[in-house]
Image (cartoon, rainbow, N blue to C red; front, side):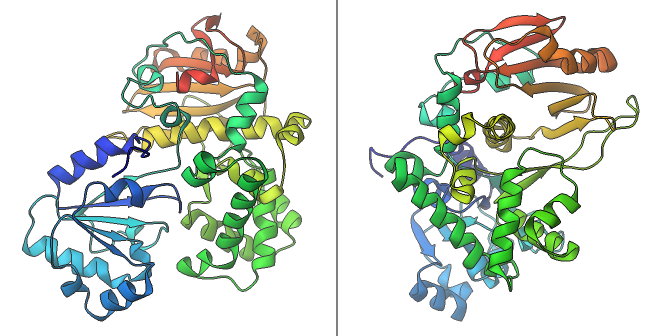
Length: 409
């Protein structure tokens, strides 16, 4: 441990899980700090990215697990057989605090047939949030208050430009904390190349990295959008089945995540297609090679970047909750009404959130939230318009306008 470690919201969650269960899986995008966080809680590490360690574990996974505990098994997907060995150990000696398993690819962990079901408790971990960067994880969060139905007022010094700057700076610890300017952009571009050229081999491989790169570019340009498959297929120049395979690959590598549509029998003619989001807004810069000024000069891209950024902040915080609320988007078939985020808290509570680039929002900007409250009534515990201005104020009946920075202030 060093004083340079930036406390993560996952620290307390992982510590609690490990103290109450035999094994924990920590999954999420590569290079988001999973290993660094987990290593602080273990006595021994098996880093499977090291060829010598990988060969030894492949030869005899059971023997490799023997030793001081807890033990960290890092990047499990490089030696999938180690999961069966952990299952056998947990079944034979189910004492608490034995294993932490980290991985950067979906796969067997998401399969209902995986032997770890019911034995390894999952935890999802994403990149740095602004709340972590501002060292505020030891305080109660604004989001938690909103989920309980209370909109806590917040003020902000951020401007539209600084929000975009935060978004493109990324949540990958190395890129965000150690690099800046062109050096950061090169790191993000290299991350994209690693995904396209090498990481895909972990989840099935791809024969045409050039077309996968084109598909990823189309996704980045359309992040936070409900885009039909034809648009992406034409933009990437690939066949329909190839596009579906590319999407599965990028989802399994935590590069992009779909946001499902919200439905209700109280509302008619809702779009059922998901939105697609690049998981880290810094990757938009890495994929497209864009700058802050490029985003500020393109209204369409600006809206997409801000929404992707906000969703990323919220996604990371929800993932660590004991019973994570479910995130959705809402859009009517006519496109007349659209809610960026509908969060289901429990069985009957809803929180609606919209994101706007304006610093001086009016009631017109909150019309979709107003409509949603009218339709869903008391089920909507909070309705919030997140904006780029400095203050919190009631903008319509039951709807609050709140600075985006409330998410970390």
